[in-house]
Image (cartoon, rainbow, N blue to C red; front, top):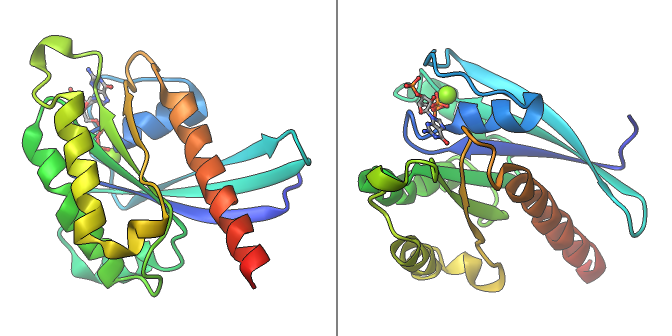
Length: 191
Ligand code: G3D
Ligand code: MG
């Protein structure tokens, strides 16, 4: 399918938060319980159509894993990133805290000082095991505006998803694509 905009997105966040599962759910409509740790990187792509003026945005998603400890792949992984999807696990508070480290690492390896970013709390289906409330997550997201002042002119949306049931997954990806296109058009009109 034709498209008139192309962007690279990365999924960041601790291992086992559900990055690969979210991508599989969104792109293939599947969920697998046999946990195969990602080796290298997975690539996915999707074309979003925006009805109002016929814009088509293709996003290529880079889902890194396995080699998260090797610095060499970092620069290549982040190079040219335009969209960030930062994923934590709602049942493990530490994975929310660690998103700050992940964002720091991304910006260390990026020329851009700020890119459209969404925070995703995944595994909303595990209600009983949930250890991060919506309020807590929202407070954390708000604290990012202090830690990364460049976000002052850009909202950081927060979503809660389940890759297992599919709840909110489609909506999250679409909203992310929309956020990117909106920012891109704003910067185009500024130039
Ligand atoms: P990662 O790519 O971030 O490392 P994965 O994470 O997508 O590989 O998922 C890690 C584990 O979490 C997998 O379980 C996977 O099935 C599970 N998982 C991912 N998303 C969800 C979700 O929304 N709900 C639930 N209940 N589990 C989820 P295993 O058991 O295979 O390790
Ligand atoms: Mg993975």
